Image (cartoon, rainbow, N blue to C red; front, top):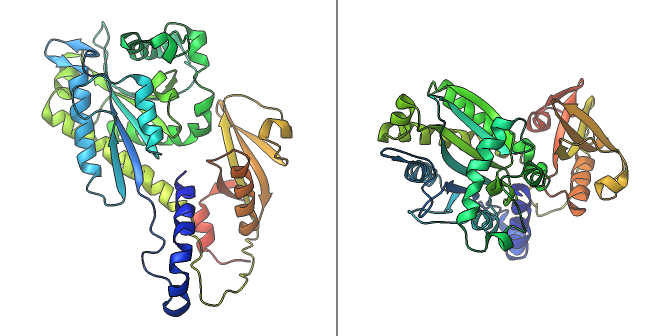
Length: 370
């Protein structure tokens, strides 16, 4: 999505700057990138307080943290912040997803607090996926229960039952395309919580959250801690704790954006005299186009990949990554990426392997060709 926005921007400015290029070269800002858009979602709100323990309301804590994150992000001129709510109002889960999709966001971050009848503590960050165990399902069920507070929820969610494990499984399929990036963001967040804030690490997990299902971009749901734990509840309910949590999440978002920026290849600037560039071939390097990551093992038949042939599959942990093509010619890899996107794999991106190990594409492009 981020790369496609850049290409659209280039096309948009092409006609208006072409004559100027002929005489004066490329204007400095002619190829300015669209802003990186982050949608911040404060869980619950209005008539839905979320978890409540004495003086702590989940909806208030989540909103405070989200506003702090937003204020930090707004200091970056190339980042746009969109809130699903910036005050104490009730917003349905489907509406939250629509806000993110309408904004064509690059990232969706939903903030919540946890609760338990014991003194359980620690942070955990979720991405959409099959609930690996009963505990994950129970967390998702609690957050999804807000559906019952919405008007006409049966019509809105086509009979979806938050209490049904079978219904939750159906939520996961559309978000699988963004699973890798969602997992990466979640790992950055958890790493900051544990290393910078010294919080108990409950890990990166997958579960069937309805709010994540509604979004078509990398998305995470953060359980910032347990308000039912005496010490942790006091921490996340305090201004100091909320400031520290917001900083940890902000740093993770910036780390993710940096990851994206380093993997974006800016198109070669137009020149007054157009010459056919030499092919960029890197001996010993294999460029592939990652088109999907899924928990399902698919047959490598073209009908499973919108007609694409030469698709390979690699298992990593519990998931399978699917790659299209294999070439040492980077320009050919760009064409393969374009082809993959044209048949519906909108988030397809190029990866590089050298000596059977994954390496940075940007580093390969900086190296000398052979």
